[in-house]
Every structure is written in C-alpha cells, then in structure tokens.
Amino acid sequence: MWRVQKVVPGLVSASGGALGLANGVRVDVWDFKEWAQRALDPTADVDGTMAPRSALAAELLPGWYDDWVLLERERLRQLRLHALEMLADKLARAGRHGEAVQAACAAVHAEPLRESAHRALIRVHLAEGNAAEAVRAYQCFRDLLAHELGVAPTEHMEELMSRAHLGALGPRRPVPD
Image (cartoon, rainbow, N blue to C red):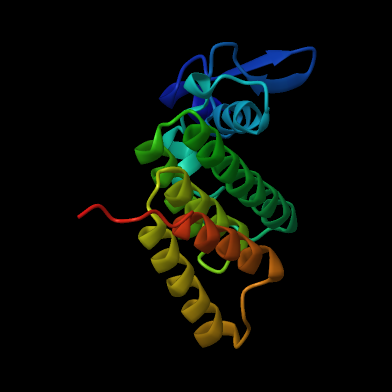
C-alpha cells in the first residue's frame, strides 16, 4: 500500500480498518456496467447508450486465471454481448443504421459463433432496406456454422430469413414501359 500511495497518491482510502478506492476514482468495469444497464433498459434513450471503449474490446484482467476472475470475465462477456445486441436494435429503430451495424458487428466480432449477434446484424440490414446485405450476412454465418460446428442455423434464424425474403420480394408491381 505504501508503494501504491507513492505512485498514485489519493487512489486508496482507509476508513475504519477497511481499504477502498478513494471517492472520484473511475473504474472501467464500473463504467462498462453502467453503460450496459442503460443499453439493456428498453426505456433508456438511445443517445445515452453509445458504447464506451470498454464495451467494444477489453476483457477483465487478461492473463489472470483465478476462478473468481474467470467467472466474472464470463459474466461481463455475456453482459457485453447482450448489451451490444440490444443497442443495435435500439439504434436501428431510431434510424441510426450505421451505428447499429457497428454495434451488431462488435457483438459478432466478440463471439463469431453467437447466432443472436448475427440475427441482430441481419435485422439492422433489413431495417435499413439492405436485403442483399442481410442475405450475405446470413450465408456467411451459415457457412461458418457448417465449417466450425457442422450444424445449421436454428429455426429462429430461418424464420428471420424467411420473413426477410418475403419482405424483400414484396407485392409485385407492373414495370412501367
């Protein structure tokens, strides 16, 4: 503790025989959790839910393998994925498709075999009216699943794509001469 106080004065406070971080100290995991709760809140305004850096990349205590770290790392990973998927949907509903694609792609990048992340990406493409992008994203995911796991997408994905195909075809209109 003496070394910590020398290197970063005021970082740690002692009170009643307990040590803790001093008031005003920001912790990236705390910031991340606050963001995730806003992203997951269906009533939260989309402007208050833009993802911080900690939501897009870092993992908790890389290189540490204590049981408590592994459990907390997985809990935060799941929280990140759910929040990114929800953020993508919120942004798409708000018409902010470019940002929605980025959030969905961040979820896909974090876990390439996670179907719900790919469904979020496909929903964004469909909301933007990019049926070809949605089909391309589906085909890439389908091929990845077949190659990596030897399985096909679930019924949820197939239903989404069947609705996409029906919506993309739409009612036939005569082509003017």
